Length: 528
Image (cartoon, rainbow, N blue to C red; front, side, top):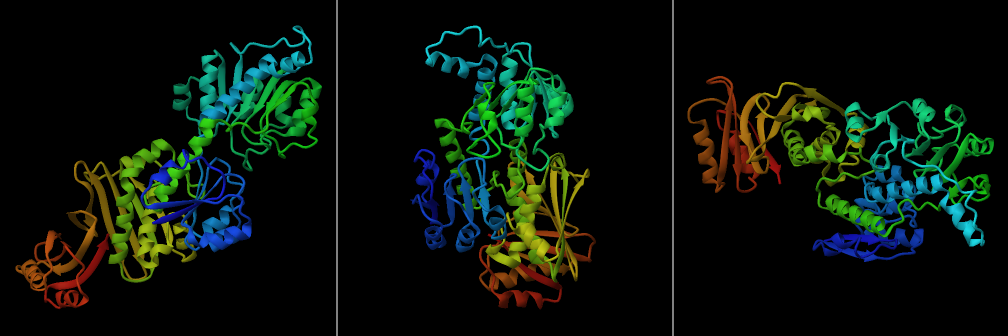
């Protein structure tokens, strides 16, 4: 039974997946101090928060059972990510749940800015009837510049197209094909700011994007341009924006986010050309429920050792890539675990080679999974998807990822090679339609086995009767053989047999097998 602590207010609808799970106990305790959290967190496997709870290094360190921290939202500023990573704790957020909410809010801000709706409203509340002051502009035929074409930026672009706007977009990962599918024009950031009538930003705040809209870029803009920011404060340089509005270069701005929140004594709030909202991009009933639903599902996946995609301290995996990779996760971990049990000596290098269809996608998540499988043989439950690379690096184990055009007859092939200070071992696996995961090669021997259960790997000399003597000895010791695979390269030369048996074999039986004249080595492999 897993225990999940919910320390911030979340609706039961958002937590429904967790509440209905038979293997999960959900405890709600809100308003806890740091010390109160430190006192109780050792009992829990996962912590679920919004923005109120500050998850400090002390809390994370106290969470000896803690495997995951979920943030029902996008921003994770209230969670100490380095401390979580060092502790091997997955930090999950919900980047998709507020996509539509934020895109709609952005477009509402664009509309409000174009038609000066907030200003007209307040004029009427003052008892005025002023139609001349609030003359606006149409969106149809205007050019919208979208800085950052991720999930939200793409949704904004789609809505702009419906309004008959021309859309130009800057994104370092925007391809010609994707731009064509969306019906937009790709541009550099400087090209974008020089042609756009409206500019909206939708990037994360990073070293590269901080002040990406600055005084130099305001100077390159068309006179009368309008600026929208519903992403993150700091993407637009507020001082430069203020000066651009005062000078008349910028006709108006719509801001939902600020460099400092709340924006106390911010001069932008004194300008009549500016409309503002208090960080409401994700503030819809649907978005609040969606982010809680998304993070609850991800927490379940983490606790159950199932594939998950929204970890902020793991490489992000786009949905289309995840769809292609997901069938291979279990195979990848089993391959790493299998080959680690066959290798003798101190591990020095792990090389993962992808062939066939897998060469077309980013396989970093699969490589991490292979590494977890390999290291877990030696490190047990202390290794997970988050800390596997860190543990490998701290032990000076090199991790190499390769792509090969040679698929050797399989649509996709994953080959894991381990180098120790004594030898090199290799295993390859694939997915067969209708049959699932298969190990198809061990070292240089072709085989066909399911990577599960109790296996015995025997290296032997290819002589008549060798297989029979192994079978007889196991039968005499009440060990039932479920399947057997034999691989060889030359008649009478070295060969392998891999036996799938119904139960774990005692060390005495394994030793007896090793004493047979044809046997070179015997290795028991557990893939439960």
